[in-house]
Length: 140
Image (cartoon, rainbow, N blue to C red; front, side):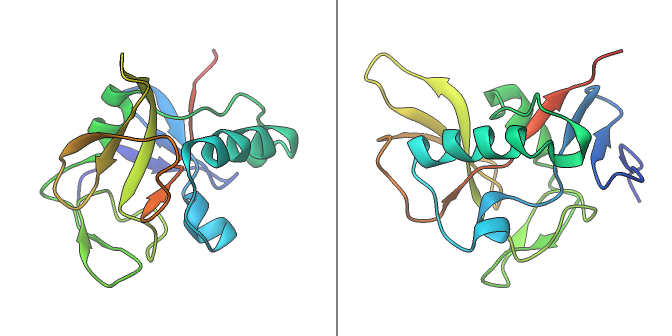
């Protein structure tokens, strides 16, 4: 098994390769509904206000962060029982499309599909199948 991710005692997953940490659940699992980009940013604020995992510096992933999760050799089942290609240390039954922090010139936001690793810029009001998966930089 790929040992790139370490499960910490505080419930956070450390990406040893990228030197970042992830919450093991996405917003869909946590709140039970899809999120548009504004709601995804509100979710970031909520997780920071409750010090999720003991930290208050959670953020939406960059394109590089999000694509770094995708690994065709890894399998985790999403909310529909379909295969995602992320490390099995993440909590299953999650969403498959995640928001990033990347906004283009047309004011659309990049999303990453963890089923196939594709990216797409979508309108900020898009909600269906979108979730927030939060990351933080490790502060030494």
